[in-house]
Length: 309
Image (cartoon, rainbow, N blue to C red):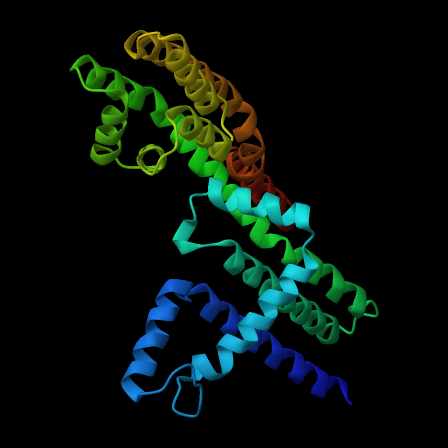
């Protein structure tokens, strides 16, 4: 087969991979899919039958995506699967993500990376096309992990920034004579953000039968943040020792505010170092052009005039 034919096949594979990736990205969760299937089977008067009357996605795309997901499970070690599950949980299940959807996106990214590497190799007549294809496929396979980690880190940072204010609200609610569980529920209902969602989950776990200590420890394990872990541990110790929560929360709030100010000062001290490289690349050349430009023009004009005389 000629290189033109291989290039065309590679381009088609790349387009198909992108289309499948977009469809998988916008795919509804399993519960909605089951409800849709129930509605379809109820309307046509059949049970569990997929034929030519079924939607194209149900007949063609769903089996393909299911097989790709199984391939991803086989390619991912068990330890890595547990780590990914923890990362998805720490990220707050962004946009309805779950572990199955993440594995599917990883496999689709791998195929897209391989197709792109093969396309680049044939376009530029590279001799190491197979090596480039493998490298890009492996790199694309881990791109969703990197994105998920960044989402989890951003969510953790937001919880860390709002923790001091949320603890103050919790302390004020306790001062009004409300119990700790009810105060957590009120704070979760009247605030927004990831920390509010985590507090709401703690309340739900307590409601279904978990002890307060278990729910707070689970909060610390989910978030993987030192401040939240310290807050949860302090609440657990206060419950076991009978210490008033109000006093503990006031101390926690004071410490969190001091730490937040220290982090802000540390980031402010790093700003000159971070802007040094952009200034050298973008600002310094323009400044040199503005300062030295007129002198260079005068020298050029004087030289041309002297030569003409």
